[in-house]
Length: 364
Image 1 (cartoon, one colour):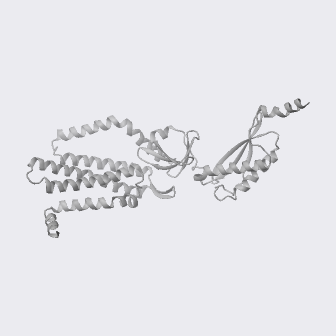
Image 2: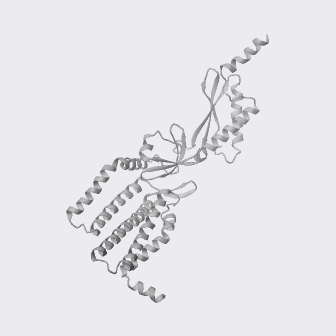
């Protein structure tokens, strides 16, 4: 058995052996390379597709080499043998271009990217420089790969080669409306330094509060802090929205959060303030709630309506990832404190205000 294997191996050229071994090794270590070296989690759909493409390319090269060497070598014409060689050559060019782009992008991100902690994981995120250089490198690799494919296919004639490249150019020109705006918008977002991976942003006029998970070439992935789900937005669409970056607070105190309540005129201002102060003291004792205790609670009147006073409660926080949880639990503590102090948080209306007088009239 060993002699047969040695005989088979001896029939391969040195180039074929190197190619077979390289493809086999890459098939085995492709997943660890993506996860631990390139830092691309394979649970992400786009990264999983890239991993599948890498494995499929390597497997295709191995299969074509073996079939061409052992199955179709006997009795095949010179023309069919040349077609097999061209197929292997095209696969090699595409396979090499793919891994070359991955390796070059990895070194660019390491050199010009930023190390951030998103969702408890340390990742290297793109910056304007890394994204721009990555686009340049991918474009160059694509051009060289295209030239290599044209030469492998035997289109040495300038007219034939120019015709193929021209067709590809026309296709890119016709489809540029679907991909160019997202690429340009992604570069603008990165260059503006307004949105970074790990920031908490508010869009759709407060309807969505999300964590920026990853900014990619064509889209941005968000993590909804309210519903605990992923949101995918095209970069061009994201730029059209009004974005409030809550993580980019202008004061060293942190983000100034506001909770508002409508309380009736029958309660004294001092009693209302004592209510909020007591709730603030209670909330500081809860470890799960992220409120800066170094700065006092700010209580003030926002508006005086016809039937109630709108009170504003302002506090500071720096852990924006816990913003929703802090807001919910602080509101619950204020509600509990209001019940104990017999101060209703329900907004009074005209019917409620006239009820005591109607009751007195009916009794008389």
